[in-house]
Length: 231
Image 1: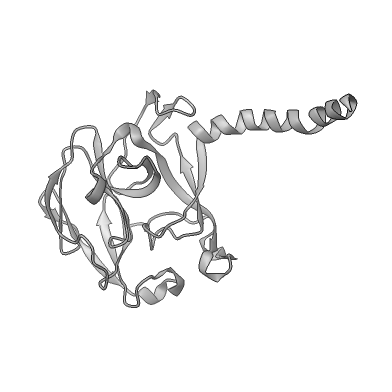
Image 2: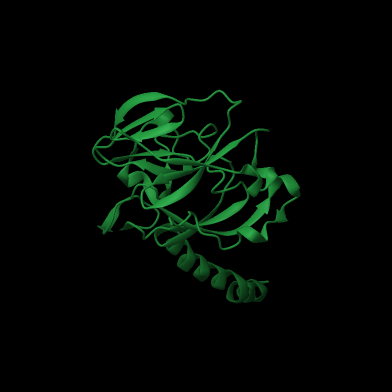
């Protein structure tokens, strides 16, 4: 029995333990991946997407903590980030809308940043897979935020917080929202997010499977970037 246990340890347990000791810190501090369970970032990110998280985008942290060892950048307006929700500690994927000191308003689904309304362009929902919509008549618009454009989805039949007065983002915090504006629990409800609660930046969709279609793969979403380059 001892020989069998020793052999199992040599052939299985030790290699797995070494692999874990290498991979776990890398996932914690360098690169991670995450299955997306909700539709709050549609039509940019779908349920069933596996997204790549660059944890070195802004800083280097002690593995398994939020303690910063070094910092070389901060989230930019328009970045898609992974963060810990202030109200629950849940890991969420959201888009950075407001930077520290920004005044953020929403007027009938139009974002106003520092007194300037963002530009929007209506897009055809027919260009997207129909299984991503929870509403029979969605509005898909192109929003100009930061250095790149991205799509935003509005669900007119749903009750949602579509208007709020100017909120000044506190120092060291960031205002985040989902791209599915009427189906997102974000800074409109839990407030601005502290800088040290932002884990990293989402850089791409690695692979994708459709939960509503028996986990059929979505090959058109494999290795897909996040935003639209501005022409």
